[in-house]
Image (cartoon, rainbow, N blue to C red; front, side):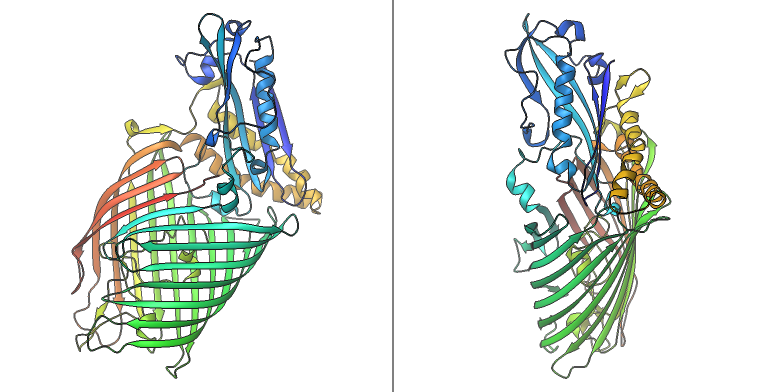
Length: 578
């Protein structure tokens, strides 16, 4: 097979490596799979092109004219030049060069149409990883293997960068969640004014949550200090607290910093803090409990560590909270921590056992008002999958995770028989998903693109060859040769791991049985008949490229007074849309 290889390093402060491997049509049936109906090189010559199709996401094609066009007779080298043109168009595309690392292999299949005509199908296999936050690449999430062309992609998607989730919960009901993240104005190459908006609404109940933020963002990909953001936010929520409910409005000013250490298992550190003024209207479920309508000022701080330990993604979050109600209610303090671990344990190619573990704990001062106490139950966020600037992290934890009961439904009973939130908690949660080979399909097909070289191995090798180009980029940002080489080596080491996983183990789709286990305890002063709760359940997990669907039932094995016997859980989320 005759092949050409093109590498490109973008200039400027965004610092990205894009590698492209372009294969001329030689043994095409091997590249596309035996029996795929692809003609060999000799059989294509002299045929008239009926259609040239470039297979990309959204059906988009590069805007530049291709060397091979409909009505043209295929001559020697036309296929190779067409592959190269597609590669070059992708290498200069905005989505490929905007703070991203991309590895692409371009191949073609020519299919006969009658005796004298043919269709030419160009297929770029692409692996894209963001480099603004390396930790985001460590979690084994589905990604599309198709190239994305910015200019021809749906403009609302590329501008708004939407997120979409759907959930079902015993208490909250069916709910939809959505968000946008828009750069309103680019001030410089690395800075922008931003608009963020997120919303969640129950379709069955009155519950809702929403926020809108305006901010200033600075990005420094590839550097140890990667990002900074300052935001002003308005938020409003109405959500359950056991049998009662809390309605809250707040105005806040917050800041965050992103750090990317250059050594060891720790890949990213996120620091954040905020000052908020809020109003809280709490209606308790017990008839003899007092209603609360308090305004308060709140200081929040958080730190999130992300990295890879034991081959899996590890995340540790710590929160601190100090609040001072205005109505002489007395200040109160809360602290909480959650440790999460996720791993896809390989069994064979494209077959892994999924493991997710959460361990959490929290405590609050005894004078914490009822609406700010801890309530256990199902949570609609996802600690391991959600972005570090999402509500899962910017909001203080509501309490322990217990999926056998509805959102914030687990409370404690006092000697007077009153159901209240707790002032301390701990929880452990475990999910295990098992592979079924017959119900999955590899994301990257294991096909031979050269003698003794598969597409999987080719994509992995291209990462290894990109280190020298990254050194040049880092030097252009002001690093010395020695520091640039050390930094490039560490970055490429972190990039290599997710690329290896995607190339060898990720699936285009996979249906897997899911097993779940929860144990938690909620405590406070003046309790009676308190106990540790235990729940177990099973369900199904479906991964389809950029969508993840989970459904199951959690049964309470050991429950406290007032707890539900069980809870159906359904979650649909879309990830890595670009």
